[in-house]
Image (cartoon, rainbow, N blue to C red; front, side):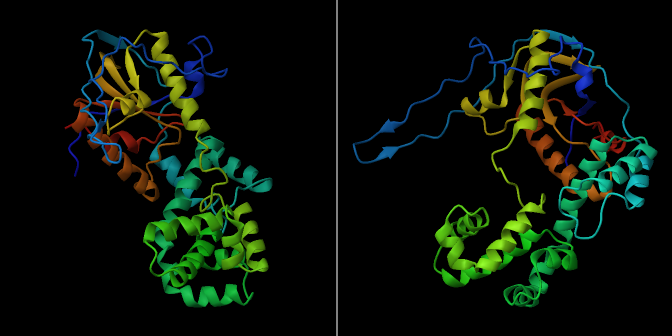
Length: 352
């Protein structure tokens, strides 16, 4: 069990920031940390000769704190969601249908929204819980890909089943299924290739970056199936792997909030450039007390903090992140959930 200092859990929706001159109602401009904030000196690479370059290890990151005392009352926009409401929504069965790994539309959206309203939750919260459930389902059911692989590959290779039909049978994302089939084909074709390169090759085929590889490992019908699968899968496939707009915007909104209050801080990019390997979204250089608790770092989460057992994987990941932050910077921190959090979340991070 991780021993954690008290971690402040804040729930701030966009409306909570409207008092800050509409910082979130318009496009938020990123705040560049003043150059007066000192870092540990950066070192240059040492060149031994024209052919070989010896790269020295990155310098140790040593933040310089200001010692300025800051008292901040950060209001919660809404109360945490009771675990009974989350359980009622989960047990209603409205969030999930077998094989439903696509983005739902029309009547299904209305159905989910109605279920959320009945338990006092928002549609966004319901959608985010639904996505977390899907990820958990994939983790729990991934063993089926190995157990049923030969049957699955035969049915797909002989056109007895489409990827969407296999997805419903196995209750797994269709792109995960074709990825598993491709991995086997690539492994058999290039047994001497290192694992990392084979993995990259499979990814290139799935994203259709290299048409020669695609045509080598997939038939015309299988290519068509791959393209259909990608349209109906938001869990096993992301159309834009570089898309980080929403999380980035949420971080920028928090930076703007701190800047408005003249609080000195370092961003994640600042810390990385200065050589830190442990990088929360924000390191507070002032001695900040938020809602009565000392806070040294802030991590922004652009999702809903569910307290359901089915979302335990995300909670475990947060435990590990917090342990790293506290070991590196000491003291407690604040996790800010854009879409709120469950009453169970604070209980999972008790004071030691």
